[in-house]
Image (cartoon, rainbow, N blue to C red; front, side):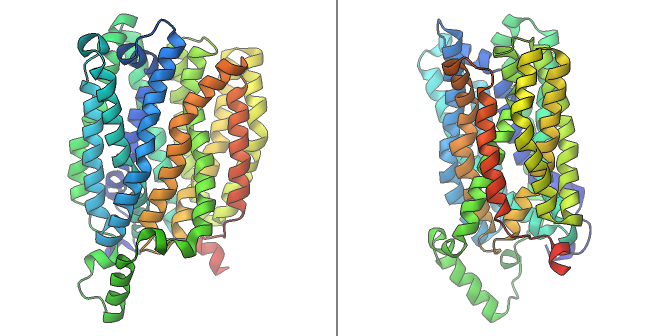
Length: 435
């Protein structure tokens, strides 16, 4: 996208690029909010906790096909361009979400119901494996150099906005529908709203210009053409070897980010199942924290363009490590809305400020012929290992230990590892490199 390299990137391009990311997390949050109802629909059990664990476990299964999708779609985006791969992955994602939404209950079709849910989760996971890498690579290549941190932070902002929308939808349904109506069709209606985004997202992505020069420039110099062909001929697992240190550090950082993000989003389920607050309180907490998070993500990305990626990230990340355990302790100790809102928002602010520039940092340090594949595999492996299992693990740890602080210890270990790994990455902000 040569024409946008030095100018403001049109907003519609950013919306189109990150529409898939937003849809993923709208679906995720809707599933998390209604996990209890989904568990009863597809995994009926005499023990409500076992039904919830089965529901969360099946949701997590979809994360294990993400590495396959990343290995398939990521390198393809480096060879043929970002745009066609983003269109293909978004289409497949829509199929998976729509299939889950329309699957009949266990009472209607028996064992076929959980099997179909499992299949659609696997399809969706495969598609999502190739979503983040090409989208992030596209944004880094298309955005003005001195605004890459801000534009890259839109990856996280769309997550927060989608989560907030999911929270509003869940809150409205909880207020308007009875428990039985939520069980029978309310959760399907919430997920169905996400399906409606698919045609609009496809239309927007089909209109995007390409950002990868090798995929658009038919007048490449012979040397550049030979280099592009040589890169395309080398398998991804071999071409990534010179950048393995960046890949490994990125994996640790994104794993930490994944656990933190899924833990903050888990606060809704945590409020209902562990603290025994009403669903209205749970939804309102999620809405409030995600609105705050969207603002802070953009602020963190904006700051990284002005003072550097590392100082803008390391300071709030260090404060977060200190704040996690006291925050969860205060929620459990005082067990009132003031403690719940205050502690949740504090952790959210620190987490979001430290998250804004992370995708940009990792992507900036990979060459163009490895950006989509590298970022796809880093994200997919991190999310497949920790994303789909975080809610399950934290629910299980609470059950096994009987301690409401179990999620805090789990997140604290992850945050400390992420802090160490990020500190070892080099600075990549142009403003710092020029000084």
